[in-house]
Length: 392
Image (cartoon, rainbow, N blue to C red):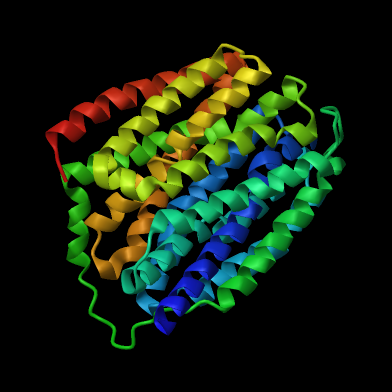
């Protein structure tokens, strides 16, 4: 009885780590690009800035993941990643379009410590679940709740105008650094599940990733990030152009993440019934619908409504992808396997960020979202055929 109680407490602590880590992601994800746009960056510069992040994400996840698997430790790396990113983030306050090279350099270093914390926390959570049991979706859903809560608070904190200067977004800087520090403290009190006797790593086992099923899965990772990199970069700037007030820019993401929380909470039972591949395909169908509607310059009410599709585009896709990569990856490569997903996605993010910036700069947001919707639709067709040919 005591062990069950202790296990529940540890699971809640992992849920809290997800909560605080994603709270920082939500503030930067919602207001970061709006801030840079108000500091004078053009659409092309914003695209380049995002491609820098994706370029760093090609090698940084593998560095952190392989180091974690080799050390058989997650805790010290997660703590360092959160603390260093908390200290680096305020530097963006002093940089604008006139110091673009320096801005890209700081963004690259910051991303090295910031972005890869999520897959490493996922690997750490899976370490816990593989030993103690439990539902990944229920723990991960607290990350989605953590993403949503700061956006609810932003309704009361940020300005009710869409014409403010970059300086009015100061609360974002306070929130991001504060939540990263809290996450580091939270991580200190979690068990690390280190293995005293280290098994010899069989690097040849990685040839499992050359199986046709795995290649189709990694294609889904690549094209999804190709689509979502420019979407996340320009969606909130698009809202700014439409005249949406600063304190309302988080509202579409409250709707989105609310739907995501529901989907992730039930993802375990849904994946057992319908399978991970069905989750991937459903996510891409929802993604194409979401983008085509945005390309039609919808009303504010319609924008809020279609954000509910995020429950499928992320809430269905993320648990499905975690299940697939965890199933095809040997136990001793768990963190490496999780971060490999980030590496493949980063490659798509580089191309997507640059292509999206060009589409937005030359043709506007209508063409940007239409082209991204076409990419999602074509990918859906290709994957439906390929997954039917090559099974797990």
